[in-house]
Length: 278
Ligand code: FAD
Image (tube, rainbow, N blue to C red; front, side, top):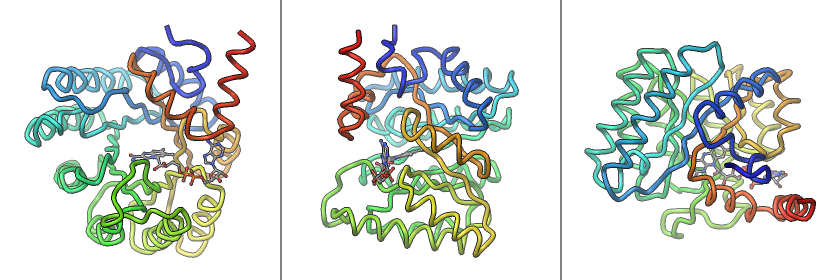
């Protein structure tokens, strides 16, 4: 069972628990992007199993009136096993989602996977006429150019700063430089994207910049934040803006929970307080 300490960041161990979290979050005006935890499979079997689980999740979402989408990781669908396996599994999930009108996000993993992820996104963006979205990382030097390619495609793009640790040759490594790249990319997206912009950041500066750019260009946008991170801001913002919460779920919650706790001392303090109070 998911311990209460982890339930701040993880929506449950099962799909029904995750859907219940989605319902509660929707009631407060925020949409939910569900991610089944799992990544870097080096065998086909778990990748196929997660693709099947996503197909079932899509059926479950379609049977409700929830504002819920899904987000998949390429290595969860078999990219480490082979690009063909990833493409087959992604196609299964996207086709099922498209039948039901459920939107599919693709997370972006380390920089060696960017081409395979963007190519697969492009294929499905065209096939579904915009039923898919992809994440891009502002810390990669290539991203500003990738955005020019993505601007001509249907579908959505989520801009994040980047959670991986790519080498200097391909990435900006200093935080101020990453922030500058994020601002540049965001400005370009508000100028060039018709299908809207997804701001994947908890940073109040970036959220405020998005609002200014929206006023200037009229481009629609949504803010996306992680479950358990600045939730008050998520619910406040939802009074005026489209807000989506990325909510992971599933039995493989432990390493995700550690990542959240270790990335910020406030989260570590929260975890220690929770342990101390039993
Ligand atoms: P940071 O640069 O970490 O912090 C800037 C400011 O934001 C802080 O000074 C503070 O004011 C505020 N802030 C940040 N975190 C907190 C917190 N925990 N509590 C309170 N305030 C805080 N990365 C990928 O590489 N691939 C993905 O597919 C991907 N998907 C994502 C999806 C979503 C919806 C989100 C929100 C993030 C995703 N990320 C992904 C992670 C992303 O790349 C960043 O690592 C992460 O969001 C931290 O950067 P930041 O912009 O939120 O803020």
